[in-house]
Length: 451
Image 1 (cartoon, rainbow, N blue to C red):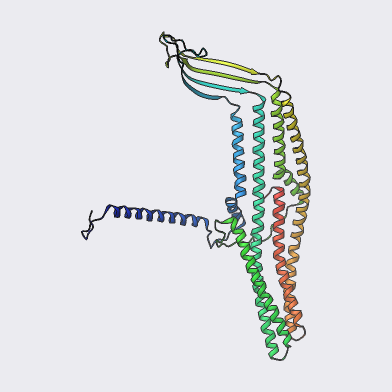
Image 2: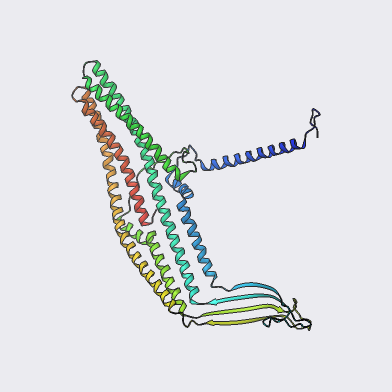
């Protein structure tokens, strides 16, 4: 093979070029696929992420929730498998059997076999009827209900965790803005004290105190930046394959209202996942007791076989008799004596059932206590939001008036610094109060099953 200059290409060169070409195509395809996946994983920078979107993303990325989802699906299939055990099973059986004969004879040496060559091709239908199969279906259904309740517990727990991280990240961002405003306020006050000192209207101690306050605000700003970044990364772990992915959160307009205490009690009695899980666990224990007691009763077995079992693999034999036929059998196995093993199994299942009853009553008592605690916490946090907003307004007005008094020479620098600190504390307390209310509300909704 020659190129334009007339030089010959070697076979190794051709293979090398082909390998390089295929490698380039593979790299390009992988890059395009990675770009496509990245574009799907990364959020739109212009579209803020709402709480519902954050929960949806966390459900797709959190491994514990994925394990609960897989377990629930597997338990649902177990229920289907147990129900299929109540139906007849069909099998197509094929066998060829050869038995050694004595010399000059056609009679096989093994008396259990019918001929030297025996062919079997049969459709076999088997069915076993007993209380144990019904108990197995009940147990599988109860286990599926329990797995579904555990999945709901995992989902609501994840929702509560995402809610806390979501509002915690929002609060960290707002605290960062508070720290930036406080640093700017401190720098402005430092400039004011320096001007008053130069005009011989304030002592040098005022300028020193203002500089110390400004330095403290700079340290607080640095800490606020670190806290905000940590909060973003903690939430990003649940939302994206790369927690460093930039995103913007959509803050809600206002804090949602709380339901009444009576409505919360009704919802908890109707939809609490922990209570459903305990009830399903008791159902599993009851099914185990039924299955253990089923060993006292007989099992009825039915068998129908249709096909050939002859010395020739044919519908008709050499004497024109038909090899194709059927047989049916009914078997009744009656248990008589098993050295008290069945009685001990029944006792074991009853012991576990009693323990499940105790767990159910404990769950009910704990639900009542947790509901009252969570509702009181959420109600108190909700009532304090208005007070926190009022405290901010009061602290801001106090700082404004104190600065005016200091400018007029009627207040000291310590009063101004105290007023600045009071405003920062009030603003941070408001953000902590919002996080507290949202976390308490998420806990209440987790208990009532309304999240």
